[in-house]
Length: 88
Image 1: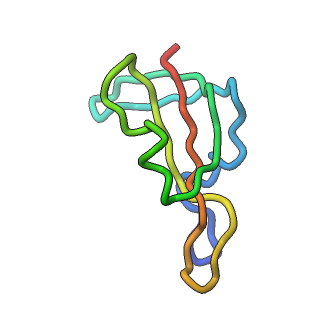
Image 2: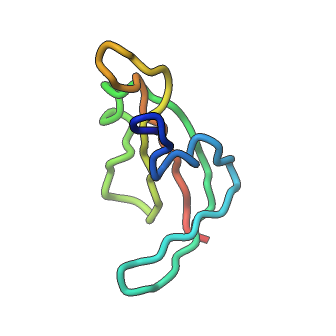
Image 3: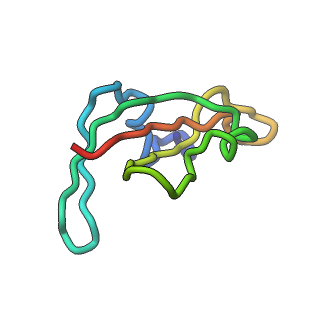
């Protein structure tokens, strides 16, 4: 979420709401619109078990960043924030 006291590139995900529109621009300049359908925190050690990395099924956008409580000993967040969005 942040680095050295400054918000990171995905910091706004901490405030995105279900139903929000997300616009992605491909390397070739093509724009793609998605609508957020879920937003949840999972403990980092359980991220692979969420199915977020699946390659089958319909297309979707998965945005993942750090979240939850910050551990000052390990200098790491406990959780990952997962935002899933479907094409519109």
